[in-house]
Amino acid sequence: MIAGVPDAASGWTLAYRHAFDFSRRLGSVLANGPEGDVLVVKGAPEAVVAQCVSSRLRDTIAAMEAPDRAAVLARVQGLAEQGLRAIAIASRPCSNTSEAPPPSTLATPMWQSPAASTSRPWAASG
Image (cartoon, rainbow, N blue to C red):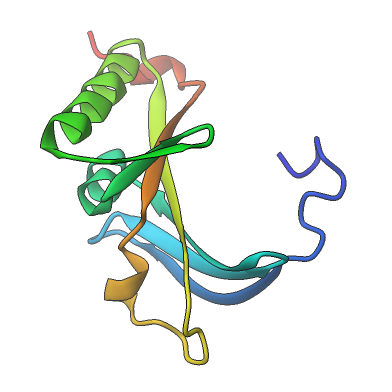
């Protein structure tokens, strides 16, 4: 993505990184950017979506309730049935970043977005 937009990372610095945790099934970064600090979480859709409290579609932010989470996971399941893998990416503004946030804080995203990637030939369920 950054290769497609040469200045995409301009003005951003990494403040903290919580490496992918296989038991939590997600990883996080805290980035300092031009508009403030942002927490970004990436991982298994089931793990990330469970932490989401709202969703964003373009410029609209709406509360994310249990039926919304189920709809997202159903879409992820549909991708899996096509042999595609999905990850969820969530972010939220983050304040009070004078100290590295604890891992539990890093797992509270405000929105999510599944992203399909091409599958390996053996990934399709039969």
